[in-house]
Length: 276
Image (cartoon, rainbow, N blue to C red; front, side):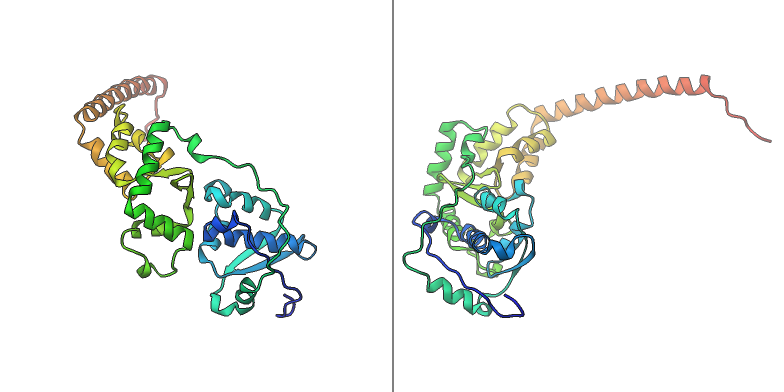
């Protein structure tokens, strides 16, 4: 737009593959298509984009590695542009709403090749049988089905409109993605309630202590309240308590020994002058 008035319009139909995208990914795709289609206007200039999808604003402000895996390829294509995305209510964007419903039925097939496709499940330190078990439980679990449906259709702006069964995921809604039957938060797989006890025991199996168990869990798993549950498990473990006690005594012994050695050097190597 120039001086508050549009100079050109664009719209296109989505492909069958794009029809299965989540709402956030489709909103990101719309921005990429518009910026690349009007490259002669947008390249080398500061561009302000208005979007009626509020989560997109926060996603594009994240570091690339922290963003959900699915939109990362499109975010890479946006890197060539100096673009700022602002949220605007859909009822105030009547031109965009009109064009989204009046697209050309025979739009040319997009020729842009997406970046390398990465299967996030293959990078998890979880065995294939365990992943398949998580996948099957995700299909059968009611809360995961509701979460998948909300994720694909788009989250409501108001927290009060969210189903109580998926309310614990609301604050992480812009980090959730769905791939190959699994739900991810960033690079971490979402574990169902039925399998959480098993995963906690696997994480705690080496009795590494609270911080080490939390670091291990944060690498590949997520569920609401995970950190608190793991802390409670480690604190109630007698083996971990004995190990932490032995570690503390060992560190205290080393500290006392070093203090005495350095204290002796201080007394013999330095003689302060006392005035008066």
